[in-house]
Image 1 (cartoon, rainbow, N blue to C red):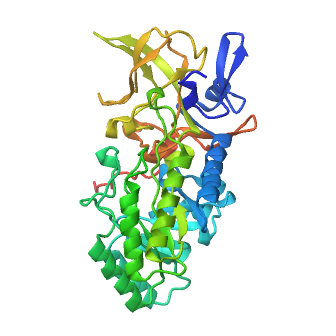
Image 2: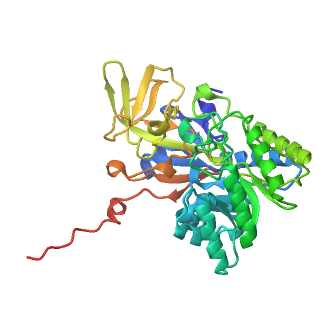
Image 3: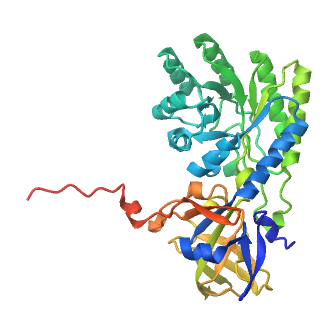
Length: 441
């Protein structure tokens, strides 16, 4: 297979057309979808999403002898339909704050399958979590004191509480996506965590687990070992068990560019964690915890494809510019931390390259460059370009910059395309606005 095609969803194929070959996904004609729903357009392939989940579940069943489960990290991309997919697949849904919790509730996710994260939860976030979540991850002592007040007010049922540990160790990834280092804003250092556990005991709060997260988009599971050891030491010191939960978060990488292939195997990640937890618990005399992984990117990123239409082709001193109708507003990741993508034209995608091209959007920023120096064929205005591995941390970070309207999102399955988010309208852009007050004559 062409290496660039290996980045696309599993159902991607080349179909014969009068104009030559064309990319299809889940047997859907991408030109028809773009003409009907407009561009930019985001596509999610159900089969690829299901396959990634199946790999996680099979690996857990093979390598971990204890109870285990998957929580979908909603921050990767969450809407009603994705939350429904997670719930019907038996996953928990990780919600950050009141907003994502509202989406999960609208999707009908049962309380027991809702987990709430957040580094600075507001009073409204905490109240919503107490009312509707099955599990809440405590980030700091101030938050825990507020929860103790809610507990004393006899609001029942109350979510189970996990304490988020800051292990002082990061994984090899961009500085902006590291979360476990000593000076991270996330979680509790060891002494704070011990204080939090003591407060839980005094107040009778339902402390049932420990959580940590070291970073996102890493390919080597080895650095997880030291953090797992420190967390198991804490579990032993705190006397957790015999029934308790351990969550090492998520963050496993996917390949975004053909030079990053192959995709990092999910099995390697799961096996490394399972082995460390098994041996670590045995050494410390701990019962095996309920092991709960929290993948987002490695579940959904490859399932997503972004479609753009080229509006113009320009040439500067040393660059061929393909000016597309999206970019910074629907995908700020390249501008935020240098994320690198690939792309193919939808029509005759395997034609020989003409040379490097720079794909840039219409927004008023020089940093609105989606892809730099990618070998592409001669592409003309009006053609469609497909950007693979677009399923995570793009739409969830999207904005209305320069009055951009966030794109439609389609769920592709069995040859059919079903809208799961409609394109924002001009009316949507001004729905929140109110006019200036009238002044007296």
